Image 1 (tube, rainbow, N blue to C red):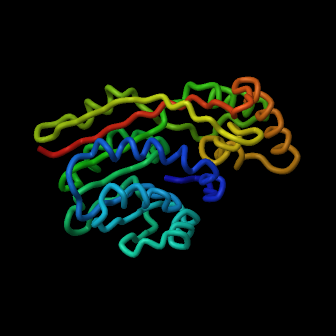
Image 2: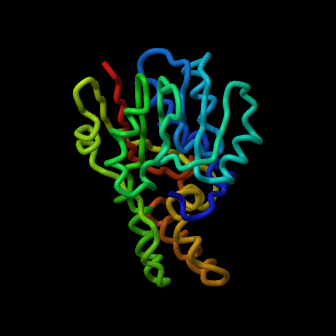
Image 3: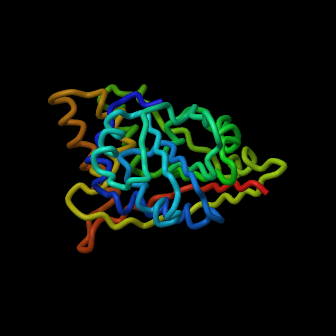
Length: 252
């Protein structure tokens, strides 16, 4: 599923902003849970909100990135949380079903994940919930493609995000209640080149991985300049509008 190495430190630079949509997602998952599986758990930053939502649950994190799993194991001290390397896209319970399966900003990296969602939901005894970014048409991504093309990088991996109605149709089946919605957050980022620092930890990774040395430096300089025009810094920070799509499917 993951073609390039992840940098946990860069990803966590705006950890609070990245966690906020997950908190909103968990708030819409009803009921209690004894076991929770977090698909695409990253560096373990989902554990505190999961623990706050389900204080007694055993939490199992799965991620295909060895770097992310290593960081999670090093940083997370929760005694009832454990982490394993594996393909979160194809993960299925090997024994008893977990009560809840969640995924925080992972499915966009999986081509045709729309076909996998009913199968993933069937792995949960009670509820399946996920959120994905819906900002693929935002200036940050449009400029990424345009500037990358100037440097001859055109075949980098792009995210696969569907319309909310497609997610509703994929998950709405007999025996399930499904809630799908979208929210646009206005993140106020601090520091120089804030939007570049944000996207370099996620969406720009495939392009950055395809460039080296002076060429990479030139791309970064050019991309930063364009981002600072599209997202001008202000006295209070840089505003990054960020659309997210959410889905919660609950067994009746």
